[in-house]
Amino acid sequence: MLETFSFALTPACFEHVIKQDVPEGELGPHFLNQDGKQIRFSHLAEDMTRDYTELWSRYGAWSPARAPVPSHITALVALRARLLFSYRAIDAVAGPEVALYWIIRLLCGMTETDIVTLAAMANHWALGRDIGYVEHIVPPERSGRSGILQCKVFHGLRLTPEIADLQAALRQADIDVFICSASLETVVRVFATAPGFGYGLPADNILGVRMSWPSGKLGAQPAADWPLTYGAGKVDAIRHRLVRERGHGPVLVCGDSGGDTAMQTAFSDTRLSVIINRLADGTEGALSQRAANEMTSSTPRFILQGRDDNTGEWRPSEETLGFGSQTPRLLGGN
Image (cartoon, rainbow, N blue to C red):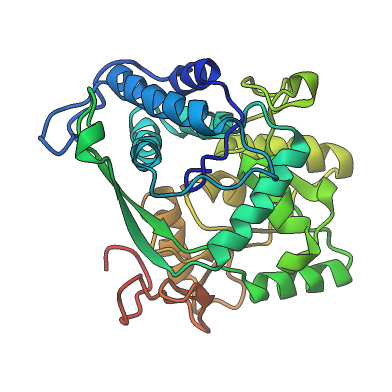
């Protein structure tokens, strides 16, 4: 979306959704501009709306038929950096419960078909990119009230054949496979179900964030009677969708971050939890430590799966190679 200005929001709606639920005060000492000054989110929102309005007036709403906006357009460079900076700051200041809905609302105004098309395009684009960090900086001539900001983002989308093999083996053994994600359900469904990506799960088995759809277009409000599928909300969704229907919890749960810890530990029926080793800290780091302690057990409750962050591939080991490193590590902080 940020590379090609792929939005359906009018400028007024854009301004509304980027301000929704976000505190207007200063973002704190960890989020400064290049002059070392603290930033008020109201100033950041004002600058983003100015960037967005200029782009909208020149290019209008996205559609699959519209030519992409050149990624080097100055207003788009500024908007890209500010939106990425804002998402990171909102996640830190207001928490993931606010940040997750905030980023999903940028898709407001699109039909489900639009979102599916855009998600498929984005997946193919990301799979073709090199793995690594990209730094985004607001151009000096568009510094605005919030100043010159910079934000470094890691790109690394890759397919995982081992997951496809595991899912196929489980389904062959009559074990149904579900995805429970903190992203918009429609977006996740594209990667998890479309044949070209290799997973081919049933569309009904994708549990993610659900929103309202007024007049057939994505709305700004969460769907009623459905939890935010993050942390404990993932447990609620699994209970709602699986335990209520089948009378038991999942036998196997895989995860890779603190947002997955609750669902990896909540169900007495779960025999095994696989932790994709991102050298995590926090709650997932504590589970990783437990998995490391259980490596010699014949019946572990938690196990680690290492990966090479330089290639996006899994390793035949519990240890992970962090990006830029060739030294495998078992746990974060070691």
